[in-house]
Every structure is written in C-alpha cells, then in structure tokens.
Length: 64
Length: 440
Image 1: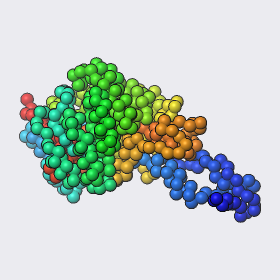
Image 2: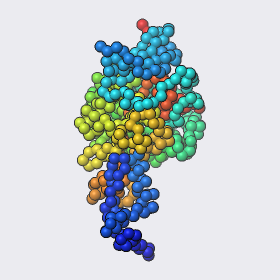
Image 3: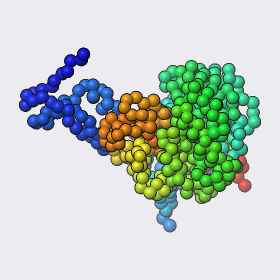
Image 4: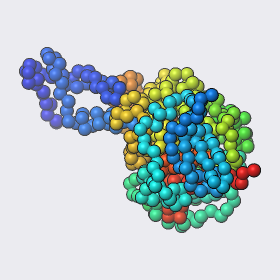
C-alpha cells in the first residue's frame, strides 16, 4: 500500500489541503486542485504536475 | 486616385517565358499588386492584397530578398543551400490518373501509366527521415490505386512518421472496405477536397454532384478513426460566399472533421489562363470573409500569419470545438515568441508536430470517452481542457499557392511544402509552375 504523504506549510505549520488553483498562460486561464495552505494560501506545485499536465497544457497552447 | 507607391522589391518570373525578373509590390488606392516587366514579353500585374488588412502588419519586418540572393530560384529548384526552410511536408505523386476531370487541377492529371509499387517504395526510402517525415500521397487521385494500402504500409516501414492522403474522397465514400484497409495500413489523416455545401458548386468546379459522397467519406473515415480535414478550393463568384457554411458543417462534424484548410484558386496546372484580378481571391479577402461569414465565432486576430512558410503563403487558427461553439486558442497578440506578425520563423519540425497533433485522431485515455464528454464541461478545468483539445481540436488554415502571375521568390525561398521528384525536393509552387503561353 502506498504511503500517504502529508505536506506541511513551512510558514504556518498547517497541513496543506487540495484546493482549486488557477494558472494563466498565453491569455488563457486553467484551474486544477493543488495542495494549498488553509492559513496563508501558499501552494505546492509538484514536479509531477509541472512535468506532466502543465507541460502538456503549454504544448497544446503554443502555436506552431 | 493616389499615386502608385512601391512598398517592396522582390523577384518573380515572366509568366510567358518563366525567366527570373525583378518585381515589386505596388500599392494603388489601398490594393497591392505584384508588378514586373519582361524585356521580351512586356508588363504584367497581379493583385496580391486588397485593403481589408494592413499588409505591413501582416508581414512584419521580414527581410526582402536582396540582389544576388537566390539566383538559381526558381529554375534550379531542388532545395539549394539558399533555401530558407526545411521540409515540413513532402508530397509524393503516386499516380497521374484521376476519377474526375476538373476544370481546375494543380496536377493536370492525365492517363499515364502509374509508377510501380517497387518504384514508389524506392522513392519512399529515399525521402523518409525516420521519425520525422510527413508524406502526403497525392496525384492525380491516389485512391484510383488498389494498392494504396500497401503504399501506406511501405511509407510507415520506410520510417515516415505521418502518412497523409490527398483525395477527392469519392472512393472513400463509395468503398468502406478500402477505408478500413487504409486505416489498418496506418494512414494518419486525410486532406479531402471539399468545395462547398451546395452541389451547384461541385458541378461548376468538378463537373458533377459530390456532396453526399463527401459526407459518406467523412462517415467512413470516422468509423475507422481517420481524421479528415476539409480542403475547399476558393474561386470568386463560385464558392467564396460559402466558406462560412463549410466551416459550420466542419465544426458540427468534429471530431471526425479536424479542420478546414482553404486554398484560394491559383492559375497553374489545368487552369493556365492569364487571370484577371477579379478572379483572384487574396489572402486578406479570405481572412475578412471568414470573420464576416462566421458572424464573430472566428475573429481576425485568431488567425495567425504562417511563420513556417512566408506570411503571404497562409495562416492558421487553433480552436477547440465545444458543445456550444468554438473556443479560440490562438491569438495574434499573444504568442510564445511575442511577435504578432510573420517575421519570426518557426521550424518545419515544430510546424509538422502542430498540424499532426490536430489532424490526427488521438486515442484517449482517462476518465473521458472518445467523444470527449464528461460531467465537467468547463474549458478552464485543466483535465477537461487536455482531453477536449485532443479529441476536438480544430484548425482553420489556409495556403495560397502561387502561379506564374503572382510568383514571389521571397515567398518561394521559404516554402516548406516540397514535392519529391526524382530524388529532389522541389518547392510546391516551383514544381507546378506553368507558363501562360504567348501573349496576344
């Protein structure tokens, strides 16, 4: 069974929870759930997300 | 009337003897003409731009062709070191026969013997750059060959990444088993001649009714997951009023139809007459008419000048078909390079990857079905967007081919569509260039 990892906000020491976060790129906005500090709103963007879906969105939007 | 104003210098050919001669873009009352003078055959003028869009904004700060550059162009064509673009798409004629006899045909098809399969396999091995090549099987009408599926297999075996079929769609509509074989052979996508939503248009341009067959061809391709891009040839007075209807039909047929690729008529091949300016449909007229006839669904700023070829050679617009209409992805004022005009050149590799991504039907994974449906239908939802753009991506593109009247060597030297001809890669408009006979 995979270990469930908890992410703690380094400023507030609160557990980060998935929350809707909006990204802007080339005039378009997209949202997805990302770990967010319930206190200060700091977000954690995983390398998996950056290399995966975010890269894919960029590729789809970049014109030829 | 304003004084004529020279706004650009270039080189062209005499439309009679096809000798390379200086030419200039001359603005007269807002319209722009390519004008040139042959010492033997006289003065020639062809309209290249009307006053719908600022020509300078469209072309940006692209450098002119200078004296002493591209001296072998177009006679020595076969990609010389002076050519300024690589091959994006290579066209291979697999037959010169055709099952239509259109008054307009760039290839001027005729009943000559077909090259053998062995000959074609040899050509494919010569032209393929494994993992890269997009080969367009053309003609004539390629589907008159029963062994076309074997040719597709051979192209894939030679290493072609994408195999595109350029067709009038007749056989694809009549012979579903043939479509199945093409799909199993690995055909990537289809460019299908589609001139209008009214059979009067087909009678005028192709000599017969075709609309129902074309619709059947789309249905048959959809059954085997082959993406179809509709390719209307636009002739003033015949079908330029119909492009909004064509686009609306194409959008309604998404995801089976992947886009519309407009080709304003050029006067070469089987139409080697000296055309009046009234029978030319300039790129800016096309842009303007798309916006007008789409009643705001597509804006001028969604259509971006070609940066793979020359900006006067075409444009592209990138969209997603949503249940309630089009969502535009491309905007001329927001691009990766930060330039809104045609001055920033894009590599042939990047261009090829883009068009293939949109024109090929992709196998979808994840929560969404192949129709791209889900409970969430919000384009701003990242997961939905990624699924929907793959299933229902849609392009509006254009390519304005050149003929002996409006051939501009500044454009030709940036051409990325090359015809494979006996071991040479020849820019499309140089390959099909035909003179107009002696001037009366």
